[in-house]
Amino acid sequence: MRLKLIVQISLITGIVLLFTSALFGYFNISTLKRAFLQSAVSDLDHLGETIFRAVFHQMLKNDRDAIQVTIGEVGEGKGIERIRILNRDGIVAFSTQKSEIGTNLDRKQAPACMACHNNENSLEKSQENPCPLPQSRRFTDSNGKEVLGLTRPIYNEKTCWTGACHAHSRDTLFLGILDITISADPMLLMIRNYRNNTIIQIIFLILSISLCLTLLTKKLIIQPVHTLLKHTRAVGKGDWSLVKSVPGDELGELAEAFNDMTGKLKKNQEEMDAWASTLETRVEKRTRKIKEMQSFLVRSEKLASLGELVAGIAHELNNPLTGIMIHASLISEDPHLDDSLVEDCQTVIHEASRCSKIVKELLDFARVTDPQKEMQPVSKVIDRTTTLVEHHVDFRDTEIIKKYDPDLPEILMDASQVEQVLINMMINASQAMQQGGKLTIRTGVNASRKHIYIKITDTGCGIPEENIEKLFDPFFSTKGHKGTGLGLSVSYGIIRSHGGDIEVESKLGKGTTFTITLPI
Ligand SMILES: Nc1ncnc2c1ncn2[C@@H]1O[C@H](COP(=O)(O)OP(=O)(O)OP(=O)(O)O)[C@@H](O)[C@H]1O
Ligand SMILES: [Mg+2]
Image (spheres, rainbow, N blue to C red):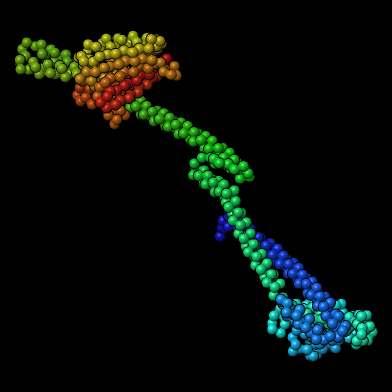
């Protein structure tokens, strides 16, 4: 189980405080107890001395009644339990408790006698080395009450054995003892009060110190640690926000180190992201290039095999077709020919010439591999083409706009082949603008300055996405019997044989742009 830091600190502080306070309290109370006892014993000593002085002259005169009265009056004092005088035989001569006068105390049992008669310096052993009196003691009386007792010896002073009564011999050391017992209650009450006060103070001290420590720990340690923990978790989730309020202590240093680390991590992450995106773009670029190469290869292969096939078939067809046309013309010019057959003859001639036109285009398509290149100004080639197509019937409603780059360099090309490409594209454009529109021709040099471009833009119907891939395939046409579908594939073959390329951009309903690039 994981204990929270604040709980651990509070627990340890509490235990240490409790232990030290208890120790401090114990020694304090013990010292005070001893001091109180000493003070009480000293008071008792004074009281003994006072009583002794009060009855001394009465004892010299052997005025027993007066002694008894004095003892009785002093014994009325507050807290005094008993005052008595014992003679040297242990018989109670005077006492505030009159019932015990005349009784003989057991020297070994009575608390007043035990102090001297029950130890090494016992009076029975040596008169010369007497017990060091007065003796004080603390004991429990017959009522179970705690009391303090003082036993004071009454010595045989000179005034005693020279007195008028002459009651005592000179050799006697002791005449008796004065025994006083007072209640220990006031002293015990004071000790109890002091102990209770000390306990309350200790509890208050522990509580206030614990509270202060807890609040300080929370503010100075727990809160900054929580903030750091929150930010660490956030960094783990990719949030790079920094710790804002940094305290000026060790935790502040930690926060600064954390911010430093977060900054470096963020920078590394950004570098990695940038690197990943560069890699992605590079991969995309390469993939596009590979796809282009692939489609070019497929197209080139198709064109090559188709070219061979077409060249063979076209040659084979050309002669019979010429024969059909010549013979059909001869028949149609024959005056003996039935009028009803003249029209059929014309149809034969028309269809045969259409076939011948297709054969011619097929031959053009097959011939593209061998261009006759010369340095040519591009704008002139374009101008020649536009002059040709302007008179075409499809261009009636078409506005031709030319935007040439005046600094365009001359390039190496077979002008008639490039013209053929341009005518194909311009006718396609005009056919896409049946209701009329604008045909814009732009030229310029590419950013790499290695190629020139010719852009042919129309405002026609546009090309559906799915047809874009098939545009350059031989025989792909959406014009039914009006088109052979060879225009763009022948154009593509010509431009590739010049080391260039053709690209298409189209938006359905908005128009199409064909971009031809040729190497400088
Ligand atoms: N500018 C253009 N706008 C819209 N579609 C076009 C455009 N150019 C070409 N196309 C589409 O591409 C197809 C192929 O064109 P291509 O020139 O190869 O053959 P064609 O024009 O159909 O026939 P041909 O050129 O032999 O008369 C066209 O049928 C047409 O659908
Ligand atoms: Mg065409």
